[in-house]
Amino acid sequence: MPTTKANGINLYYEVHGQGEPLLLIMGLSLNSKSWFRTLPALSEHYQVIIFDNRGVGLSDKPNTPYSIELMAEDARAVLDAVGVESAHVYGISMGGMIAQKLAIKYPERIRSLILGCTTSGGANHVQPGADVSMLMLSRGSSIATPEEMAWATAPILYSQSFLENHRELVAEDIQKRIEIPILPYAYMLQLQACLTHDTYNEIDQIQVPTLVIHGDADKLVPYENGVTLAEKIPNAEFLTIQGAGHIYVTEENDFVNNRVLEFLKSKL
Image (cartoon, rainbow, N blue to C red; front, top):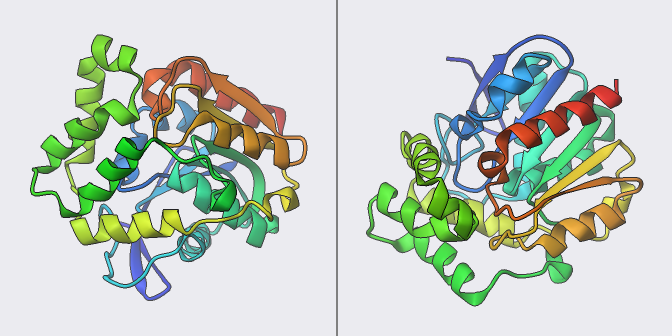
């Protein structure tokens, strides 16, 4: 079980496949298992590195303040542990926030950047609806089981159409998430890091090739946030996933994987 020491804690990571290195960074409350729909396609062509952010999975879960910048330092430590000088980086949701900070602070470590369903944060962040915000905040104090809470949040993570027509795929996602459920305090620490994230005045510093991906039915991180990233990052490409919610990696798995591979291959 590979782990590395970073900022006083142990981080769990895995390496799959061969080729140019590609670091995948997962979102709020989720561990590396949630890449299960993405990993097989990408690891056929790349050396894919996945890891558990602090607070989730098999990584340590310190009960001290988290920040996006600190988690970017964690991600850099994972690259160091694998012996990778620079990598393509793909982050979704909170992972996209971490990827932004990594690219801004350590541009020499980034070959290209993929930012999925994420935001630059700060005062210019377009907020979700009040009902969505209240539900996300309540997760930290809920007495529901992990499975019950996962189903309660499903309507804000998936488009209504997908939830109605592909409930079995949502159930597969949920089973992966609850194999190692996040502890309530760790969830709140990650959420607080997300709420204080702000790269709005820095993202124009990103000079590496960038692909922004966003579902236009995203209730958790509204679509306008993806538009902002694509407009502010120089020469960024923007991929809209029509009708998809926040978890577009499930709703349009094959299409997105193929588009990501096309983008990465074009940057070789």
